[in-house]
Image (cartoon, rainbow, N blue to C red; front, side, top):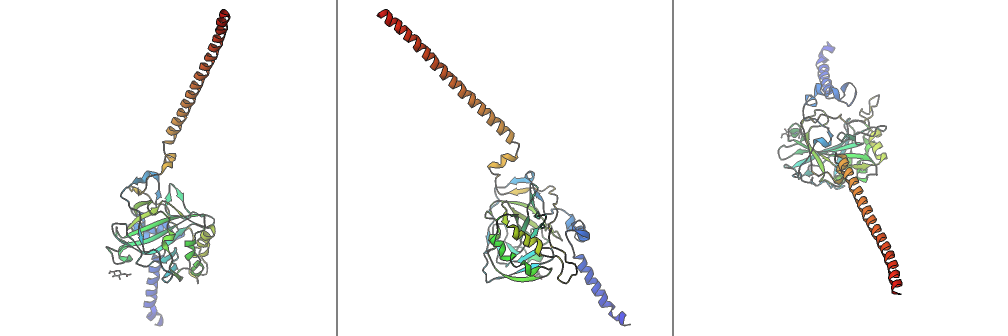
Length: 346
Ligand SMILES: *[C@@H]1O[C@H](CO)[C@@H](O)[C@H](O)[C@H]1NC(C)=O
């Protein structure tokens, strides 16, 4: 009797568990990315991200303007939420931050990261000619000209614009320290702390005019093909220590879970470019011929030119020497003649 009366609650709890279970996804294991399409069909669909940005896909587009960002320099008085959502570290961004150089205004919502592990420091999602970087930052914006908020924009084809920044291990990055020094306060899933605002622009590379542009998707479920991607050509660096604070401090499991699951290697595998092209805002620099079929012809013609120049110099030198020798022997003959002349004269 008592059991029966409580069964609707049990049922409700089971339903909630079912919903929660459906919303669960990981990068490996039984809920890993190969299984994403079962619950999130877009993950198995078209226009997926990330992709390998390789030379064959590139097409120079002179109409691509430099990226312009507004109000990225936040005051320390503004509070941002730094959180661990079990998939990544995320910072909430105020709606005054936006991209002003695209056909619509794209308002910032959040930024988050993807990274490798301590023994495998390769965790960027996009790769460039197969090169995978240590980590990648995504600054997520939504089309606020057309949609009132992120949730209304997230599944629309012109809904989102994401700025992708490739991160390499190298020099210490003081801008990243503005939030990395607080990651020990969000070690477990669903933990959050408030942090002071700082200059978000300093997390981006110096040059915002050189980038790759293509149509793609969210790199996490539900994988909506709604993202206008901008991946900057130039990477930024963080120190090894800074990388390790991302790769070793965090867990994808809750604080109360008996077996903690480390949060690392949180990058999606490469997706097919299929018919897509990647527009580039910059002309390949002067070194580009090194990577092309032009190298051999350039080397051969340089060698030929050198041989030609050397033979020309040799020829000139020989001519000059024989002329000098002729002159000397002529002068000698003249001298004899002279003497003869002189002798005959004498
Ligand atoms: C987003 O906007 C829609 C439409 O105005 C609204 O119904 C919804 O509650 C909003 N969602 C959030 C999370 O603010």
